[in-house]
View 1 (cartoon, rainbow, N blue to C red):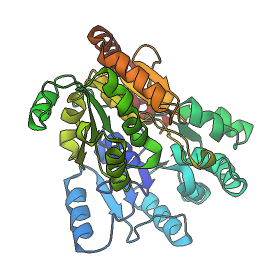
View 2 (cartoon, rainbow, N blue to C red):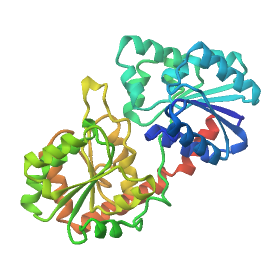
View 3 (cartoon, rainbow, N blue to C red):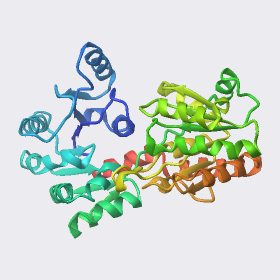
Length: 380
């Protein structure tokens, strides 16, 4: 692998799925052969101290731009080109293709021999709008490879690229740490602490935003409780939709059967997955296709924990489920479909076991971080 400059606006300690993806990949590359150029998490003493502490703990060099939003401006492009030369980097990896991939031609002139740009869900949205679609096309022409999460994102992004750039696309999804997410992750202790030891638990681990479908699960609860009266919905995570969801649970009359944990530290997430009997997140597409699920790594983390999953049909979410084998894909926004699949799983322990075991095996076969990091090394 060439020595590589990673250019990204998405890097811890800033929280988020893209940030976790970039960090997990970086940790699996040779630390002597990478330099990270990233934005600052947030201004102020707290953000500065948290960022400095995080950077000091990394085995590789992290260079922070003073801005909280890294954009392909002339100043940022000049700084990236300077870092490329200073550290003798021959490859560049844009952690998110849009918009940072617009710097590719300048970095090529600065000496980059290989440029890889990774896409996530938002680039699929860019591909639908004329202005951003043209920018995406420029990014495709300036890079050697654009990576994609799954078939949904590939098909939409490829439609915005030239035929040559589309042909160079390679799949590079996020992975799962199967040693962290596993059936013995501590779920029993969480159930005991929450007073759920003897109750069937439907768990949803995700940021609380409308697209994820926690509201659909709450609306499904009356039908679920009609057949499984002691069932409980465990909603794990925080976000701007929190108050609306709590109000909905009260208005629907199921507040006593819905538990909200709020934000949970990352190291406790595996145990919270393990607290469930079924994982469900019936995500849906919003805003005419601009607000869409890129992949849905939570389904794979649940599978690694040995749970059957119920996923929504938004965007690339179905790519993270073997429908009928590791779980089911339902119509996002349909409480009836979600309730039917969830009840079927809650009432059939053998089916839960079989789907959970198949999901665990699938993660080990295809979705391990070490396998995906080897793909990235080859690309670079």
